[in-house]
Image (tube, rainbow, N blue to C red; front, side):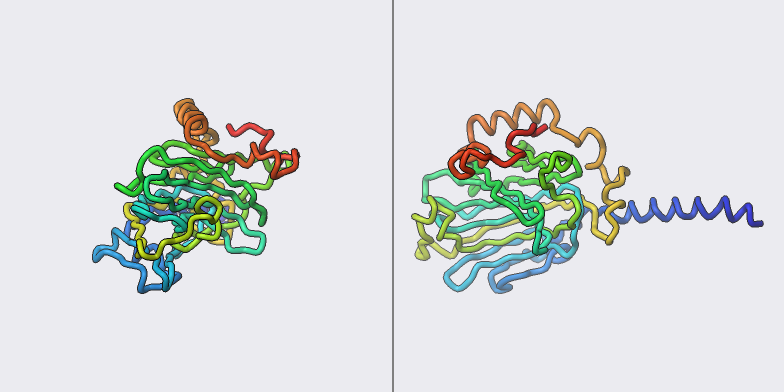
Length: 294
């Protein structure tokens, strides 16, 4: 009998681990009411009856925001966003992941409002172990106010890839083995907000919010959360499985096609790269600037 137990117990443990891994990953419901909660100014958050579309409002009274019910460690997050149209100077739409810890990790996409007729700026940033100063900025090659566009973050142990309509616009590679901080231990939640950033967002704060053009509205829909739900044990999120597809080898780096698009974005649409700002860093660029991106 004891020999049978010796055989059965390992199998049970293996099945339990596999079951926990399968439950650790989630594909979202697509219903904002199910997957998110309002964090700021409920009166400025409007959700469709079926929960599939949500808008945020900014006026002189308040901005607004919402956040995911779960924390995640690795995966891919997609969100379709239609940005504030017209004269949106000073406004900021933020779509980001954050651990909300003192030494927080954070993966940021911030859409900086503009004066009518000027292109929208998308600023990205990465916090790792509480340190940021890793801003990059691009002009979007389309009008993000006319229709919805998909913005994505792929985050795994090897790289963080920022994408706009599936085109990679930024890569932050894991060079922790070379002493570069990388978000790999802290689970992060998803946050979305619309707020007044006119002290810095548009031309360094020179263009303020024109409240006569408000209220300012940004809309969200068709999101997808395909990520590992944090359950207190990182090994389930780092395991390679059918659900944790982002851990498969082919997602360790950009494909050849993605590299071509990535180079195109940086050549034609990048307007600021902290790795080129020698004055800011007094000719002592951060270590990752000297290391490969893929």
